[in-house]
Image (tube, each protein chain N blue to C red):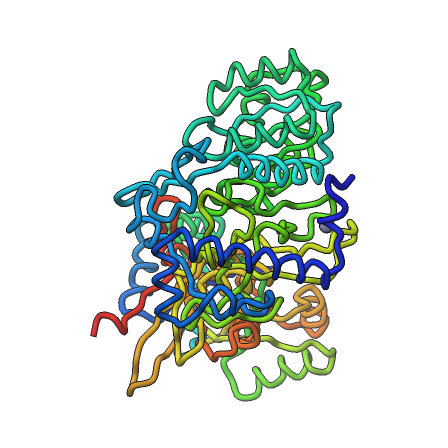
Length: 142
Length: 433
Ligand SMILES: [Zn+2]
């Protein structure tokens, strides 16, 4: 259930993100989800791709600082209160979220990528509460 | 073992008195015999009689490498040619070389300080020493040679290069000590690995390495490759050659032979003498040298001096490895900044590597300093707060060392240009305007 997310350090300069997406495209690597956390000087791109090890390798070869981070993916019905319900489960079990971002998966459900210090525990409690989780194999294909 | 316990372990007060007396003699000699110094001293209204103690040293004028060039070849000599028994010269990267001369007594004194140095590395008459510094105009080979003979060691004057022969003699003669540049020592060590020599036949126990900058990493590498203890020796031909200062077994800085060479640390910009422990330009006054006495000679080397007594028992001050050249100094908002200080901060922090660039600009008549530091894969966190924390830690450490606020910018790996060997560390945009 652990999903490998690529975290990439990006300087805030014009065209840098385009260079990165270009490299992924050239290597036939699909982007399933991404988010950018940024400050005035730099940004951190968090991206879920197909073939994460290959993506890491080609980006490193091109001089990017890249790191693979374990995250989990959660699927929720697209209706009021469903995100709250999921977060409540995590909070009740003492799991703190470092960051999260949502992405659409094409049907009437919503998906969220969640980063926590204790991903295994998060998986266990979410499954205990019958929450649906994305499998690595699925998410790289989305 | 201490070669000259009397002078190397002297209490500081009698040492200062000895230095004062020798300085007074020296100033008398150069005033009488070197027109260059006489003119300079007269311009400043100083007479030899004004020198009463070592404290008066700071009132005397500096001598620079340019002065040596301007007076090429013998203009600063204080003895007639018939008293000179040896010349050495350093190859200048630009223009004329710098010529230095030695009287018989100078050679004796030089042998003495090199003998002290070798003794610090544990070399005795029971050792066989391979002197693999170049012999010739360069001071390395002959300097070590005479000192080693004085100690009574058996000297192999093999000079530099000819690696096959070096290895053969290491094996056949069982050399126990070697003196050469650290880069050549590393090269020899690698050659031993490649030639698959029988390591049990290599008997080296001490290496005396100098004449070029080297790092602690190189020391570890050389020690591992050659199976010896590596010692750092410092010197420059203008002052005498190798043997101006040397590391003892404690290896906590290099002891300066202060009874012959008086060191000072100055602010390279103002010329003001700085207290022990502060970083600045190293200056030497050669109080006993006869042929070419130098008054407050500016080495351009940046280092610190420490006066606390060493565990080896010597009272002589210790100088740190030189951290750079004063020519690299920047003045930012009136504060002296050396790129090497930034490097030392980054090296001390376990989460950065020394890939950095100083960018100096002037905004609204105020100098600004930005330090770009490359983010490395292994230290890269994907959380903003971690990276911001790293940036603040670098900035805080720099501020406490430099006494100046610098903004730190994290940049992608590989973005700071690396030229062959020597990286450009500074972009000073103030000069462009
Ligand atoms: Zn010592």
